[in-house]
Length: 360
Ligand code: PEP
Ligand code: MN
Image (cartoon, protein in one colour):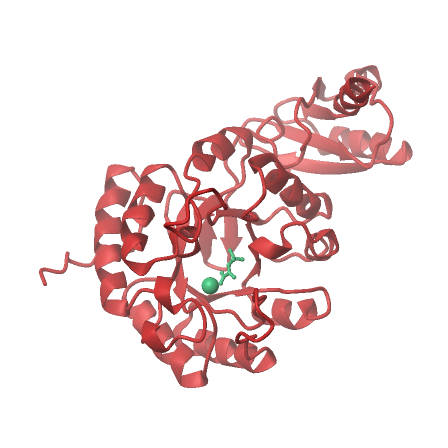
């Protein structure tokens, strides 16, 4: 019985592939046909072909309906439970544009900053330092989903104001976490990239809400989620029409107590095979101790990550959250110097002007 249900649901998934340079009118006809059946078409442009994904169908999609339409070259069943995030649907890598910056292209993206925005001075100072180091994205939590209700919960709207000031002062793009649907309008108004934290990866209302936005989303893997569950959560966002999703591996919970989490670098080649979405790595939460962040950062890039998100704090000992895994700017600088070298080995670009390796 269960097998039948799974088989049926796979039968229901279909991708319409258009001829190279198909006329616009042919593409629109296919989309209208899908809409007339009560389903939702998703145009997926690629370098070699344009494909049209179908969502919203509960019954079987009949390939013949589409194969007879002008401009259609193929109607192929999608063999995965996820559709829009799948490489079956879009063979080329997705590059997410964030203003003049991008995540998922040849250039590695480094997002750095404190776990939490703690004061105006703290975030402005670190933003200036990071800018000087060639970083292009600033992270900082405003709404903090903490395990303990007694831990620092973030400066909330005040933090968002400080982040905006930091962007104006430095031009850095802002990455900040959205904790719930109630505070989404405020977080979205500030963020260049909205972060969905590990604890919210299964918050389907929030996934649907960010799917309605036209703003890049950084979706972190839950510490208890499989790769497939992460991709299904991303599917929620794409299904809403927001195709600008960046995945993030940030460590999973295993039986090993020596580190906060186990950074699952296995996920990188697997996800790259399954999905066209960019994926970055968070070694700070992944391993949870500052002096292990550098080796895991380098390993992540060597394993094919499109970038990193790293916690950097001017004074980790006094940090209000995650100080033990935060790098001082001096250590972070050494890490970036090494990243210049690893990036070159991997055939990727990184900082516009590689900084000289620090001799100290
Ligand atoms: C964070 O980035 O500070 C954070 C809370 O991360 P995660 O959701 O991965 O635990
Ligand atoms: Mn943190």
